[in-house]
Length: 554
Image 1: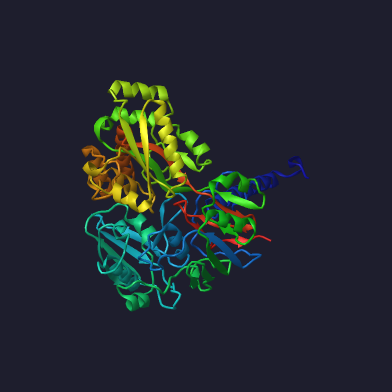
Image 2 (image 1 turned 135 degrees about the vertical axis):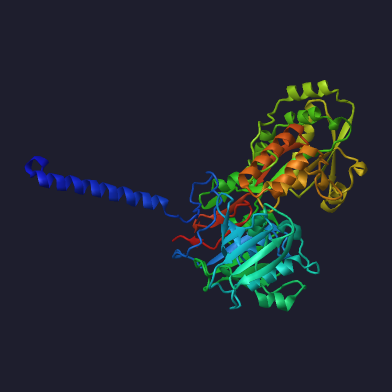
């Protein structure tokens, strides 16, 4: 290398300038690479037992699909499809299957933020009553027809048609109608502001073709036509659903040509199929086998967090009307021990009435396990220890629900509170909890609440606004606080997300202190795949898994 001392002054200047230019160019290249959008794909190749991959959403722009060793993916699920009607969905697992076929105007990114999808952008009027969607062009349905504004309007019209069975109609909010502005611009009109509307559109409004809507009218749709990466091929009820790759897909083409969803109701049988190599991915496996599968190097375990929060509703009757008593019951229960010993780790300790990934979540100081403090609070409140409380609970509905109820009974007995367990089948349970307060002969209720959209409105309003108490709604604790009511109404109409989040924080602080629930945990799931299956991704709700970017590594 030549030293600077051997060069002329001019040459030195040239060299220095060149070095500076090279350095600047290198810096700019690094910054450009860091700033460029990266595909949000998770490859769950982490060692068994490591943290679950973060829920992600794939990038919209097409990229080259990965080369796959196998072109057929076999997936074990526990629930058969009840309907393929895009507007008739009620069950998350069924929605998971058909969402590979149908798409929505908007979707979610990894953080739960709403992003463009079939609509490339959208605007909201200042009064919050009109949403204008600007649609992507050159998108075709599986029947060859065009996706456009007329199609979107037809889907909205069907959604709000009272003669059509749409079980989740209310979750889209107060939709009044739709107007076609031009071929690729459509307005959706609300009767009043509804802040969660974009999130609701991203989750609930599945789009099918105009021909399908015209042919079926208000009857149940049975022809499955969407714009998604897979086409509906066949359905053997009770056995399997088969999807075939859409080679004309507008986004990235899937690597895997065929997905077979095998209907296997028993969790233990699904696990056996996975272990035997008969399926590549299995949903909802037995928690008792969690460690066994985690420690098997042939598999990758996922424990995604769901939208479902589990709690004990405390009815405001007799001594339970006193917030100090309700706080005491929270301090009496060791939630960490329940999660570790009964759920095998498949839960997250509640530090809010919301799951931690929800919009509007605010973390509170936890009710730590402190039986001495619990007993002291009860004594200060004058709790009648000779009174027996009745705890109503289902069995088989939630993860280890009967065992959790038994643990609650045991913990409360340690502070002198007598609890009688009352077990019911699900239909009887629902009939009982939907009665008015004065017709209820129990005091405590084990329940889970898991809306399809991870937005505070769908839990806080439905569980803590006084208007939603049974029989009008399913607010199981019959909670009634006028200040919370006001905050929740303001929040659902507030279009500024920062202001809305602050309104929810204020409401949560009041709810947490009032303790209408024994706040337990957010439920997690137990899924597993073969180690060679890569790049499937977890939806933001923690329950649905998507395979449109998946491939089998060689």
